[in-house]
Amino acid sequence: MSRAKIHLSEKELQLVQNSDWLLTKNIIIKKVYELFGELASGYSDFFALLKDELSGELHESSPKISRGENYKGLPYVMLDYPRCFGKEDVFAIRTFFWWGNFFSITLHLKGSYQQFFIPRIENHWMELDRMGFRLCISEDEWEHSLSPANTALLPVQKQEALLRLPFFKMAAAFPLSSWSEMDSKLPRLFQLLCNSMKA
Image (cartoon, rainbow, N blue to C red; front, top):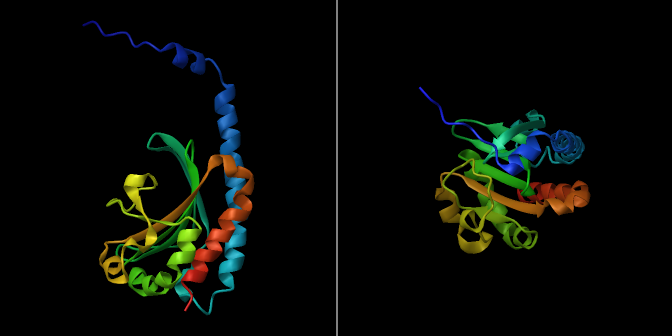
């Protein structure tokens, strides 16, 4: 039984013979880890100041950094903090690096956390909108693409509609060309998210 020959394109043939690009990619991912480690420390310090104003159980979690090679075919690194992932209830702030796309920060609420925090967050729509946050409208809870088809301006829905959603997510993103500013811009948005949920 004959088998069809598997050929490489000219571009693929050049890449498979060149290790530099892959080694450089590994160096970049390592630097993302280092950046997220610094962010995690700053996030923890700031969040600790809110212990009296936000649920105590949220303070029991520790920052978690993880990575993968295949989110829609591309490498990614994510930092979750604070993080409470239950079957029915979710509270998480996720900082995300997606190769070839962007840095983002996302607030993810579900269940009791969604019911509790939406009324507080609604009072900060204008500031959150001004800082670039958009409502995630994908039906997939774990969709991280922020394409126009998956996002909407924040004020389009009122509190009642947001409370009825199966989950609530809003996110803001920065182009990868803004790398040098991420150590200041991402903490600023993290603090804004936390402050928007205070009583």
